[in-house]
Length: 230
Image (cartoon, rainbow, N blue to C red; front, side):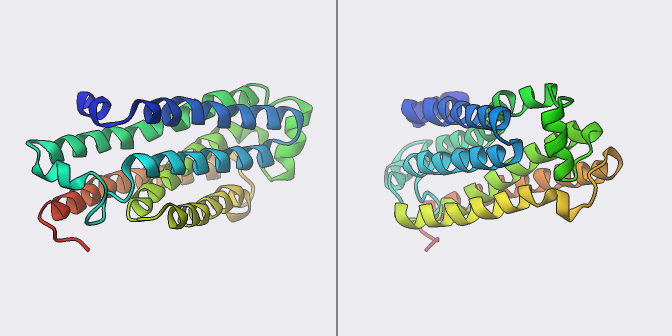
């Protein structure tokens, strides 16, 4: 499976998508949170992360779920081509978790370690976040980021032109940012106790979303192999 991923995926995509993007976004988050404000810095870094990730993903997989997408004819006529593509895409799905964790390790973790500093405490209280539950809140943010990533995957790979892809990506990003930024207002005072059900809910949704993403990918690629999709 990994062999197919490294064979089919461009080396530049591997480096840019899995290393450079999360590192740059993490630095934006960390430096912005340290010297300005944490929440605006996080939202800005999150949008940078998703925009650049969307651009690189488009030029790697393009509109692979659409009939006549670039490279599909070659894969249809090659022995084991579709199987190799499916395995490469599954590894790419899993790599999304790694990207988010790199972003969090650089941008969020240092702030969490120093969350008891007065500067951070004042801002967290302003957003209704109980300082004792900040780590649980950070976990929810991580889960939400992954959740939005998979929405992006399932939508973006239908888009045939980069202009439309960027427009759709921006709508998903703004929606994801609003969902993440409005978390404190949706669920009231974010204490440890009332965050536990939300974490459980997000974990369940992520499992369902991952299963759906795999099923959806198999269905669309199998249909494209016999030219049954539009």
